[in-house]
Each structure stands twice: as structure tokens, then as C-alpha cells.
Image (cartoon, rainbow, N blue to C red):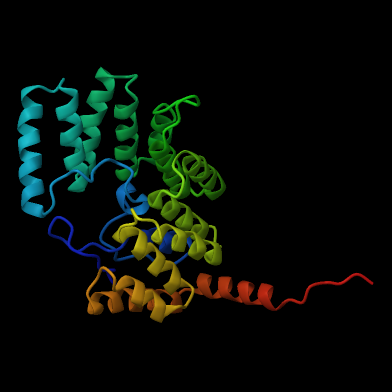
Length: 281
């Protein structure tokens, strides 16, 4: 599959991870994509990484400094968290898991530590372990919307979209109109093969003041999957150069045209729309 371009993150161009997730779960061939989806890609801002320095050089320097501080005192909770978050931002997921695992042993009842540990496990593809850790990262009397959103993302990646949507709904009760959660929910509807509802939800997400590039590119993805290629390109161009936006849309167009599964879905959808309602008598 042709790489879907996004703006440079830490000096690299990555494929749009939500495209990979949808490709895999909707039956598209995802071979050739350079990495699996990470929690921060699929779910937007759920991990507290937004305070990290911007740019590859600054981020790596920050991670090296945090690493030195961590080596000097691994029991320092704040340093360990900051170091692990920098590692996650650099996609060094296994190392982030190792740091947070040790921290969780030292602070077994610390909800923030457990939440970050669960998200790092999910980044590393250890979904079953992530689900178990995230269950203990908040309590029914003190629910955390970010953890609920992460639980939803894990459930989606495990294929339980109904449970995922339940988690997102609970998160939105705590944090109404949070664009990251709405974006998650929209992708979950897409994974459930309900693209019209996915589009509506992602349009709501994009309209929120805190919506970022990930939310907008997810809307562009859904529009392209619906065959609304021109509109998808227009949305994508809000953040990408026109040539990159066009490349994204063209890659999705080719992916759809080569997918027998997608053609079957479209046939069912057309049949449902043209079926005449039954009348009594």
C-alpha cells in the first residue's frame, strides 16, 4: 500500500495509522505499510504527550536528558514518567513499556502511572495486557475520560466495537465534545462499517475548538472511503501540501478499488438504500 503522508513528526513521514487500522479490519490488504497504529495515532491526544518539545532534534535531546536523570534515580516518579512519554513520542514503545513497568511496580496503586503503562502496552501491540492494566487505572467512582478513551481504542483494536463505543460514550459524559474521543468514536463506527455515522461524528469532532490535524485527517479518510474524494482532498489540504493531500486520497482510492471486501460492503449498502419499505395491507 502506498504510504499515506502526514506532516513531519520527529523528522519522519509516517503512513496515516488510522488508514492501516481500517485497512486491516475492513479487509483491505495492508502489506507494505511501515508501522502498526499506535495509541496516540489512532486515538488523538490521550497520553499527555503534547507538552513534549517539537521537532526531532529537540525531542531527542529532551529524551537523552530525561534518560540521564532516570539512570541517576529510577525511583523518581516524575522523571520516569517524562522519560517514558518522550520514548513513546519517539515510537520507542518497548523501551517506554520497560520504564513504566518498573514504575508501576514501585507505585502499584498510582492511577496516572497505571494509565500511562496501559497506553504504552497498547502502543507496543500488547493489547490484552493493556486492557487489564487500564481496568485498574481508574475506578467507577472516579472515572478518567482519557483512560476510558484508551480502553475504547484497545477494544476497537481487539475487534469489540460495541464495547469500544460504550467506553467512548462514557468518556464523552465526562468530557462532552472532546474532539479526540469523538474522533475515536467516528473511527469505531467506520470499523463497524457504518460510514455515514462515522462521517457525522467526525464532522462534529472537527468543529470543536481543540480539534487537531489527526482529527481532520480522520475525517478526510472517512470521506475518501465513502467515495467523496474531492471533499476528502479539501479537508486534507487544511494541514497538508496539496500534493500530499492528493497522494493520500489517491492511495485510499486505489485501496478501495483493489478490495473485494469493500465492493461487497458497497453492494449491501446500495441494496439497503434502494429497498422499498414494506407497507401493511
